[in-house]
Structures are given as structure tokens and as C-alpha cells.
Length: 202
Image 1 (cartoon, rainbow, N blue to C red):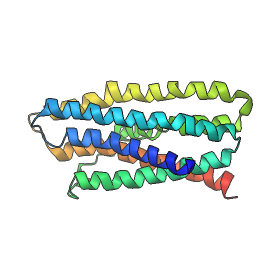
Image 2 (image 1 turned 90 degrees about the vertical axis):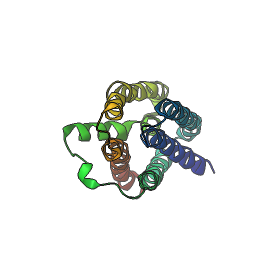
Image 3 (image 1 turned 180 degrees about the vertical axis):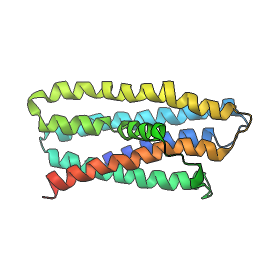
Image 4 (image 1 turned 135 degrees about the vertical axis):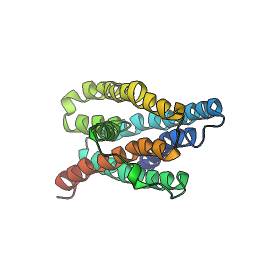
């Protein structure tokens, strides 16, 4: 049951974070209202993320790193797949891949989003493998979250604002930036698959 709660809470958090931005850029009408709605969705995101630490902490105390890895692996797959469906729904299946610019900035942004909202899993898995330092490692999780949040607030959000304020606003351009979040979640699956294959399914 605890595994289902973790997977569900994480998937909801990731999808609400994505929806917060998708609904904000749906149109340029009522932008102030959309901004308020975005903050409401982001608050819900944080509420579900706050559910994770005690649940993951319980698994960490059990000392079974394989269980944590399996839960992290399944949670990221669930989040990525449902986020893809959410994105396609909001873009009405009309998103143009030509708007995706795979440059250095996109790659860096996607890598940061791979860590963003994933810090609880990373910290607890490491803590479970190093039980003598588990308390210290768990206390470092908020620092990792804060570093990725700095990127979102000071770099990603200003780029969002620049697109929304542009005289030549195109929702496809907006989606091309939002899709970095989706790329990040897909990228985050890869290391968990590797760790899962090495430590769990051997």
C-alpha cells in the first residue's frame, strides 16, 4: 500500500507542476488570473511532494535499498508516462516537433528538471546504502531541491515570461519550452533503470 501511495503522490506532483505551466500559457487572456492559478497548482504540487519524505523515510529505516530503488524506478516511469499524456491533452495533439530546439540550453535545462522533484528519491536511496550517514544525507535533500528551484525561479520562469510578453506570441513556442520539463522526467528514468537492473533484478 505504501508503494502505491508514493507512486501516486509523485505522479500527481509532477503532473500538477506541468499543468501549472501549461494552463498559464494556454492563451494571453486573463494572464493575471492564469498566474494565480499557476501558483495554486504549484502549491498542490508541494503538498504532494511533502507527502513523500515520511513515506520514503519509513522505507529508508527498513534498510532495504532495493525496495527504494524499485519504488523510485516505478514512480518515475509513472510520472513520465502520465506527463506525456497530460502534455498531449493540453496541446490538443497538435504540437509541432519542429519547435523543439535541441541545443545546449535545452539539454542543461532537461538535466536539471531530471533532478527537480526527484531529490527525495535520490537522497533516500543514497541514505539507505550508507546507513551510518543516513541522517546527514537526508538533511541534505532540501539543499538539492533548493539548487534546482533556483534554476526554475531565476532562469526558467524568466524565459517563460519573455515568451508570454512577446508581441509575436505563439503557443507552440511556449510549449517548446515547457517540454523541457517532460524531457527531464524522461531522462530521469534512465539512471533509475540502470540502477534497478544492476541492484534489484540481478
